Image 1 (spheres, rainbow, N blue to C red):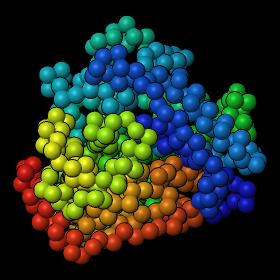
Image 2: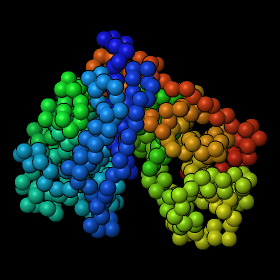
Image 3: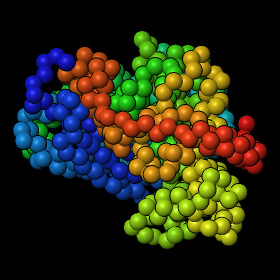
Image 4: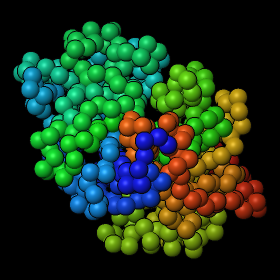
Length: 487
């Protein structure tokens, strides 16, 4: 570490789908305070999912103020950085004021309609250059929808951004985006590290209307002096660029090299794998993050998108609205033996009505355990496909997220994948801690990301699989794979 005092503090944000979270940490990773706010969504139509960036920014300011008020010396807060689940679009006027609501990545108004709506776009080429497969959602589709359905607003627009970019604009005056979050914009070309001119031509926009692309962990500017009163921050506080949420969690858990694997269990369950060869991601239809490239690994991801929301709805339908819902879920699952009495459920793709019919006569324990085992088997299937494409064996699997607090779910997952799980104490805020590391790199507290991880790394517990259950789950997985016709 360079240029560090004992009092130096950092703020890391995780701009999540369901909640905005942040932590105040010292340079050893000790959490001094944490704060969060739920994200409020608007649903003008059933398939729409929107929010207002102005209200979102107000919640960010509230969180900063709460953390500052819990520090002993606001001037010791050196920098703030943001990771987050980006992939949303907002139109800004010439004064950088939003003229539309922000469309969430969860919005479904154009989902799976890309061929019908925009047949001139080549999905294969979009994946090869942007790094993420495209199914007609996310900002490329959202901007095209604005253009085609809100022509008056489109005509007023001067800048095209994501919510994360707008946060930076409000905080420090710069409209910037890092390559990691720019990937979710789809207009960014990972192969040239610049905006994709063919997609700009398709939309009819110029790159001068897009955020400036700045590396992750770079200073975007000082806090806007006008915000010092509302936030309580010193005018010397730096705003530093971040990254997408899963590569941030990888940075805080030491998942840097091929052979490392991160399972991040949030709104979506995501597996993040550093690889040296980007083509592995292209060949397997995976999400690709720039991560540590060009000098280090790319980050490959596959996701059980929104599976936690599906499970939450299934639990509430079965057990009702209760404060101890997930405690009851854990306790019920522990009552059932491996295999859930023969009940197989796919909580990601199987229709909720079918799940309800198939599990109606089953005990609560079998229902609960089958949901946990279904998640585990779906992840095992994806990990097996990835294993076959890597030149290095998987040596270390890290798990973070809310389900790590369950007394049974990590145990089921370890037995299903047949490998120990490293579960860091920082797991529930791994993304925010990764953002804090980026903040520290930006202002020279850490020389690089690896040093940042070494300085802030948390204690881990090891969830080792039961050998007998590994064999049993291997057989159960074969049944699951056949039942749901997995490749």
